[in-house]
Length: 401
Image (tube, rainbow, N blue to C red; front, side, top):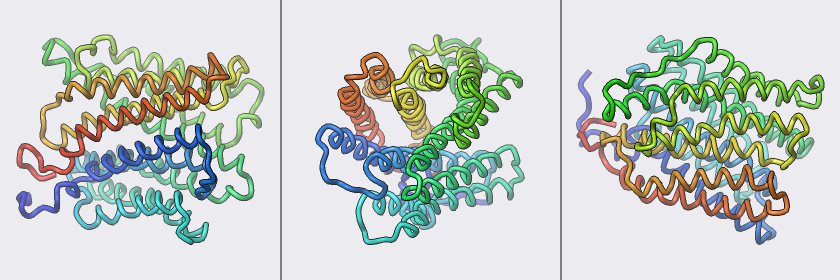
């Protein structure tokens, strides 16, 4: 089938899913985290749908993180299946659906709660159906696993909406389950691409570098333990036998630590696109360890252990992945601008401040939130400055996409 020329294609921003969703997610996170940090220090009468605390947790999961996951998967599925991805008008409509969800939750548009929930949840359902279509047509069954994961995320979102008025604690518990589920997505994708990216990136320095092959038993233990943590979170750790949560998170932390160390993070110091990906992924086993210690009663810190996953793993890996994927899929050399190293350092600082400072100095939690928020805004502000022009531009090599 002949490929369309540049003139036959839609505007560059609508040529592949990563373009609008990476741009929209980065900008949204900058605004949302900036506003949240300000609101935490200077509370106001602002009353979004669900309340400020639920809004913050929900929007960083189902607003920011879900947009990047969908943008990545609907771009990657084109490579996995050979079937052209969503583009043009349909992509604009999908992005508009995501954006409408963000606006209707943040501001009172006079919409009913069921309608807001339907708009918000339909985004992930439509994305899952689009992905399923490509995978089924190409019969690439290995990639079908992302479809039930997206639908599970949509289900968690719907249940959280539904329980807001009846059981607000359950609504928050469902959001924690969603964080662990997104951690599972990061783990699956990371296991596929980090060893490959590392081998390809270091081959220019040492031709003897080869890809680290996965150990089937370690992959199984790593992913299954994290999946069980998602299920346990849904059930409620208080309903499990005493110590079960600590043992489960401990097993997951150990397995993911071994997996992480096998990828050779210490070899990547000269390549920002690699060390950023490795070090931010390292917050996954760290976060699981902190959750293990919290379940065992050895640390408290409120939501600080969970923020090792949300800020470090999810926020950090997303930044590193967007930086690399945006270059690769726009036909540009895989070399980040020097200022992006500052962005990568800033997101690592944000993760350390938000996840560790409240554990060490609980009285300084408000300061930790403010400084972590500022570091996040710096990191994603730099990303937008470097990558927004690229996302609006045609591929450098003249190819479609």
